[in-house]
Amino acid sequence: MLGCTGSIGEQTLDVVRRHGEQLQIVALACGRRVDEMIRAAREFDVRFLACGLDEMPAPSESAEGLELGLGMDAVVDLVRLGEVDLVVNALVGAAGLRASFETLKAGKVLALANKESLVVGGDLIMPMAARVDERRRAAGLAPAAGPAGALMPIDSEHGAIYQCLLGEQHSEVECLWVTASGGPFRGRTRDQLRDVTAAQALAHPTWNMGPKITIDSSTLMNKGLEIIEAHHLFAMPYDRIKVVVQPQSTIHSMVEFADGSVKAHLGTTDMRIPIQFALSYPARWGAPVRPLDFTELGAIEFYPADTDTFRCLALARAAGQEGGTLPCAMNAANEVAVAAFLAGKCSYLGIAETVERVMGAHENAAVESLEQLAAVDEAARQAARNLLGAE
Ligand code: MG
Image 1 (tube, rainbow, N blue to C red):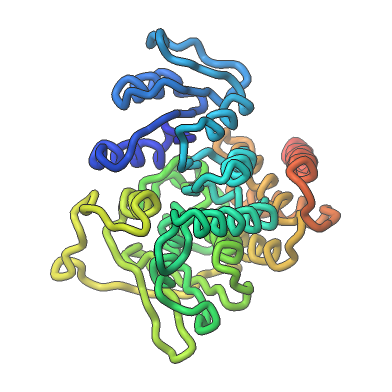
Image 2 (cartoon, rainbow, N blue to C red):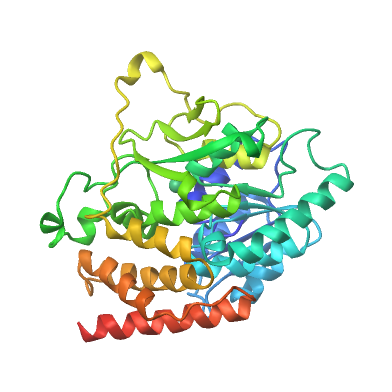
């Protein structure tokens, strides 16, 4: 469980708590919240731990009897442990790519909450996942019908599409409908967004998530990243991935088929449902939360997304369509701009401006390696910092 103290991590631990007969945690990794990780290690009887930072905050909890590594190398070492057969990657940002890469390289199942792994490295990750799928089929580890399950998405939209596609033919899919809540600023104009503060942007109407993804949800960058994620996961061209705003977040996404039929995935807005499905596939276990009561639900509304106001959605789609290393540069610029916004050093509209300018200066190339992507990521971060420093 990588990223065990974040929002996805905590909810994954809760799923494990409910299904201790099927799931056993072998290793945990975190960022700066080492004490929380140590407490989780005690609760779940886990021996192998890693803190992804280069310098660890001194823990006040005793780590006696635990093996506690330091740095991203130590995090990546955990996925190679012999007892591990599945890795939940809920690391934040582009830093998660290497862990995804090593998980699949080691032939293990990747339950992926780190969408940047696909946004930045989809061209590397998907062929690796296909090879693990082949191995799982050959070893009799895959279900008799449907996907072999080497790469399980832990994103509500992609988990939903994954389920809508079960039992279907790829050639009969007309398009994917990715739903968006629209975030806290739905319906506002650019003028009304000029003075938005971090506290306002952090108040998401439907989903309870970490700060980075909550800001991304408010700018619709999150939906842009999810379009790219869907393109890679489901081998779907960009012109057949549509976005629709569905403010109640009741419909988690939909698939439209050649005959005009549409399948939708509905459920309580709680990430434990997609997390649990990623861990239980192809089985379904008892519900982790109270299921929807449709008699209490009321209306489900739909609106088009406003890409003139929420520029990040259009920018991410353009980056995906262009492909190559451009999504990597786009994502890195966004991470720097969002961190600057949260620190009060970048305006709300400045996030999209920074992303657009870094994209404009990027020299695109085909994706070749992790090392190349790391260099593109660093150069784009530097370019974004320079722009923000100059403002
Ligand atoms: Mg999502």
